[in-house]
Length: 559
Image (cartoon, rainbow, N blue to C red; front, side, top):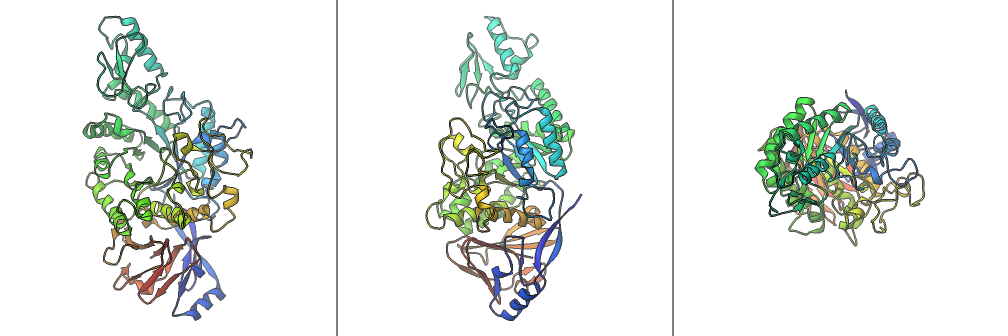
């Protein structure tokens, strides 16, 4: 199925803009004010574009606990999320009132003993704080109506110590005494990594015995033995269950720790997992968390999974923030080279790779805190464009579109979605119990949605531009280093023979670039007008002959 998206285009071809983001006033041709006057007189016309319904998506990461509360208990739930789906995507691409995300990644929703729910006690249920399986099924039906793909967080590195498997295994060891354990007597003994010795690393004693179990994350999160055929059989049943519920695939938590410090072993386990899941659903999408350097997580693509998260661009010490802050030796040149080179690294292990760029997640401080002083608002905006306009499946953490703040302890990074400045407003969540009081920088959705210059409106525009041009998510990326410099970064993206040019100014000052000899789809750049422009201030983009001048922290799109 293909859906329709409308992009606003000046009828004389001088300038184009997504609804609400950039208009003909954002670009001026210094040589032809008469043509500009004609444009203003004759107005604009609508040009239909198609959004491809495939694996390439823009995903919105949701922590249900802190998103929207439907029943007044202060905890977000599935009914509340369903009520707010139109905020994420209303199913009508002719509108620009929704964010435009066509995928949702749900952080864990299964029964658990903790607020974050990364310690699962039942892989086939819904945590009662979030609702019921019927609520989940209603949520999935509403997503299907809007063509939203849903990924669920699948935690198979470990279970909760309260999971029936672990309880049964520990009870067996307590009754065993000095005898030798037998998987025939207790198959669950094989499900975990038990040892008579307290090995190096995180091993904890089974109370009342001289046995130990592995639990690197926390004593209440015992590691599963993913080499066990019985465990693998259980996992296959789990994935089949959720695929039959309609999920598009899985986000795999802590894939680097399946066997800690052993990339080869982890790739072997992921190879089994990918083959198993894709035998159940051929087009299932699998993205893994492998929190390490790019040279290492690139190797995980050899497993046949679709994606690993692109950690080198993320967080305060990553390439995006480093480029804008001038830290870590990063600038527009290093950003441009890294965007081009990541594809080379990943394709070396899997030609069918789908990159998974992201900028922040639930384990990282929120990005509004990465920038301070003059230009901090502009950096907060352009950073999201640097992430969301990368190729692959881009991921946006809930609340980042509002410039929410939150750093330090994990609870602060998972604060309530800021629908309103009134904490008692309908649907507002109370947040995790030990969260600190957080003063937000840019205001709530209510305050931002009517302000065209807000962080929210900017990021919404970025996503709608991403949706409008298939080349952005799906294209191969060429960094044009001959014309780029420490301020200006130019990319050519190519998809099915069609080219698109992205030009960034990643500095605090206006910057110019000469586009002599640059062709886009066989046409000289000088004969083209920008199809869309993202601005963070009031200055305009200026085209003069083959010279292009961009205001600070801006992006221009040419095709």
